[in-house]
Image (cartoon, rainbow, N blue to C red; front, side, top):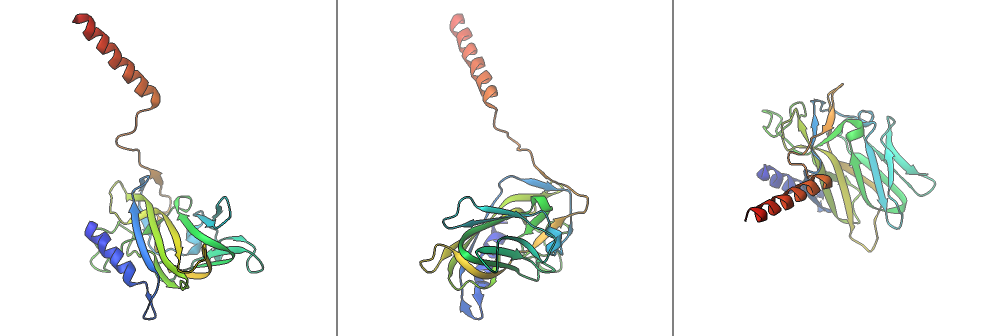
Length: 248
């Protein structure tokens, strides 16, 4: 799988060329985070309304705290502020996240990062671009092709994007290393600006958990002992030491 991840990063870098001109660098990282298990993936074609319930968090320069909105069922999935007449933002998607880009619009403020988290919408990010046929062994059943974060347009003043996929998703208990619940994107600007403003088009394929299915955290295999448990263990070891001393 490491070879696939390396190939994926190379693909993302090569796709950073727009119109024959070298554009921003895209650096992609992966973190297991909190593992989740999906009972099944049945919707590889996901449109904007299908992601209803996904959380969207926007972090702006000089604004605390970050702003979080919930993806809805309309043409614009999530928004904040009062665009187009004042400072604000909007994020929308088309009829299929594999083929059509997300459109991010920011005005009046400088965006430093944004995070999409699909738990509330039973939505996952599919990060591996598999061949159409035969299906790759590293493709979760039902997920079809995936597409990692790539830039389509609007990144003229962005030097690089730091993309972090986190909280890996298993399917029926098996790890195919392609699905994640969260995607965070950080901006590094090419000019002196503290963040991004304007319009950005980017690709990031999503899939959806099977209708009626579940997406639940996976209990850790080696849970950290509770403080009380550690205290009891310490007392037991101390007592064992006293017994040994008396016998000596």
